Length: 276
Image 1: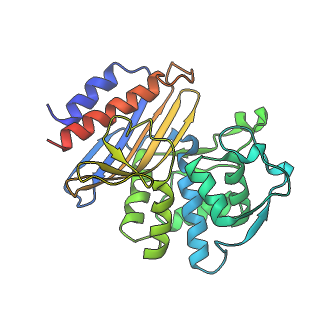
Image 2: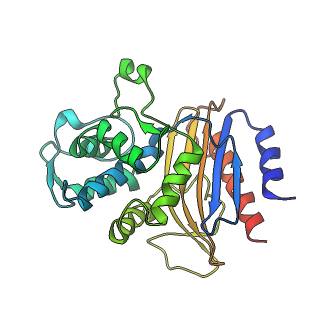
């Protein structure tokens, strides 16, 4: 049984809405399911903020080493550590970006959005990259009224995959910028979704030939799980993937919540099928 048949069987037993787009870098394999559906993205669209920042660095409009001062009004609830740090703490912009990616730090995200010139600048970057539907709608907020008005971000699995595919192909950033981009994704701490049951390695591990190198960003909110990135297989193949789910009935935050396990099992059967 091939991957798509197994995936559709798994989806039929799942309570939420699912979409994915997976492509081999050589273009010979592509797996899609509701790939053009627009999902509430949660934090996975922070990769767009990172790409915008690095592009502006390349253009000489921003710097990797500018110093930003943490202000009390910058702080926002949710993932990350800067919420608990002291006001006045100084961070260079590269470190702010690193925190946004590897710990999905919400405060760091807002600081970087401000630094690049707001969500409008991120939108301009995406349009230049050919991304027309997916977007960052606003800064992250813990104000209920702001949260009710719009999602932090919206994205389709296809456009997320295309953005990362173009990034890997060198169509968005220079080789140096691309290296920084994927280096940050390789250090991302959350591997509990699509790559959970794969024999993965990451930046901090000793690489073994039969393992999978993962470069990714995840996102999670009530009933929402998202994961997108690059998989470098021990076989030498590379896959770009984006998997998204909204409206899961299980909105708990236990390690074995339904959405987490669903994406983990989806990743497991993908790995098993392409490794045969």
